[in-house]
Image (cartoon, rainbow, N blue to C red):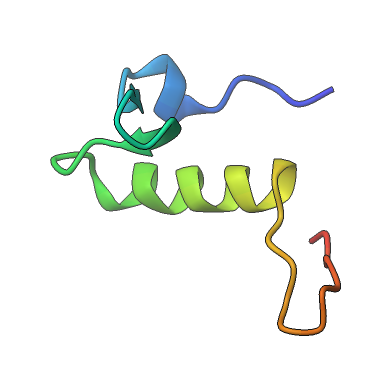
Amino acid sequence: MLEEPRFIQKGYEYFDDNTGKWCIKEDAPEWAKKEFQEFYNHIDPEPDDDGIVTIA
């Protein structure tokens, strides 16, 4: 099980009703933006052009 990331604990994440996705606030510090991207790449990876999903 994953620990709750700091960017969530600090309130830098929000749900965008228009897109239906979780987003990081524009004014979030760089460490939070990086952590957000790494976290969501890990739990919801995007397939590459060949349809292959790589989990880091």
